[in-house]
Image (cartoon, rainbow, N blue to C red; front, side):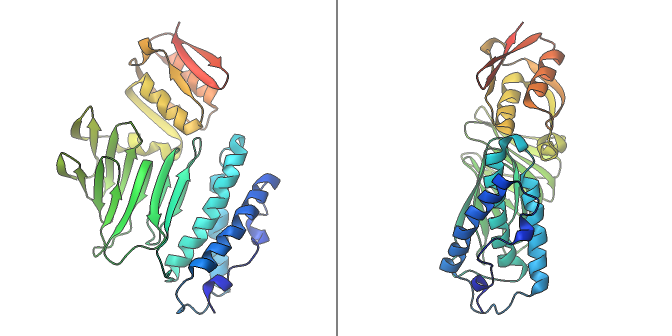
Length: 318
């Protein structure tokens, strides 16, 4: 029996028991098109059974992902959609890797994490990817036999499954990163500095127009003002966003506010005469945005005041 015929036509009740009514409605709405896609694409006819144990595993994994997606209740509509997408992608990846299923054609998926949200995904090779806000990841549902290639715009932390026969390649607008079994962070937002920070393993970074460079653990490669700089670094500063923390060490105010805008999904800016003042400290991003901005304003060496214009927050010199 084909696997697409094993997937329930309606979303199982146990997956939505703890969701709000609005979230449940979105999950149900997105589930049916997903089932139709599975039936349309098809999978290998060699697959003959799933089994009750597998169904239980899928339910547990999906419930975990849906719960993780709903970390910001004040963006309920966005979170609802993210929960539905997380559920559909989780089913696809679980079926394609855990039990060896292969689709006839490796469909390309574009996963977008909205502003004010974070998400995570497990690829078909069991590589884990954590996506920061405002990030787009484009990847195949099944990798080829020769390479594992995907495209990133935004920021993501990768925990790559080792496979010497198939290099793992992350392509950004300015560079390509070649890895094996490695943990690393890539920040590649549009019109921003691009950085690669290596936690463990080894990566080769090919910067367009500059050439290749090898990174060792605790090193960061950064493109800035047309230059490429490699240096030893405190890696946690680059990956702490996964823990909803922001570490600041003489960071320009303008840069800090851009990151907060992405993280909270709300425009935050400052006047030009204070864009380059240095900000230090540790911000708890579990707090409300207004509270975080007040902390910056009251702890800065330059006295600042906060003004609100509609949904926009502006910092000015007192």
